[in-house]
Length: 195
Image (cartoon, rainbow, N blue to C red; front, top):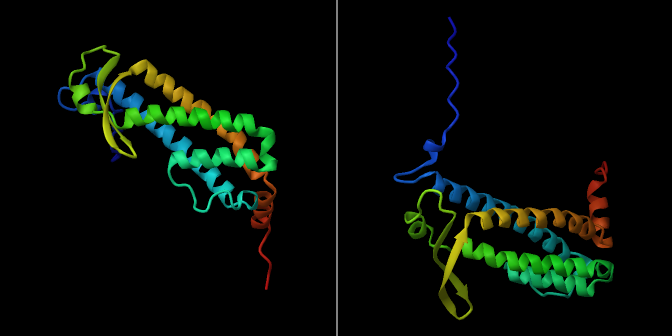
């Protein structure tokens, strides 16, 4: 007699629905979730490269404090590609990447700050876009932005984020090739000396 428990059945769409939700709701949740996860990976990877640049000897003096906000990281990135001779051969690509990241960040803000529950409550089966509002912040306060979010546009946005992640790999190689970063990496890779 075998005491092993039978395997758990794979979850179905019904397992993920709450209350009156439909598969249309789940499609939006899935697209938003994928977009947010991909964005998190992209922003994290970009932030690491900005940190490496900030702590490099070549970037010393370009900023007095580390940039923490995304807009300041993008500005610092551009400054590095403008002022560090080693990076100037890649200036056009560095600026294009920064511009694409800035533009995509605006779209991400709309999605993250969208009033999802009100818009989702009015969603009909097979509906591919929803209208609602996003609360956006500026230095002088907050404002409501009327927005329409299209499911197909969310999918395209996730693809654009994935494309920027791929481009970031090339910049990782460039940033790590900075002479001060290369020396630091080589030092860390050396075996410890015996006392």
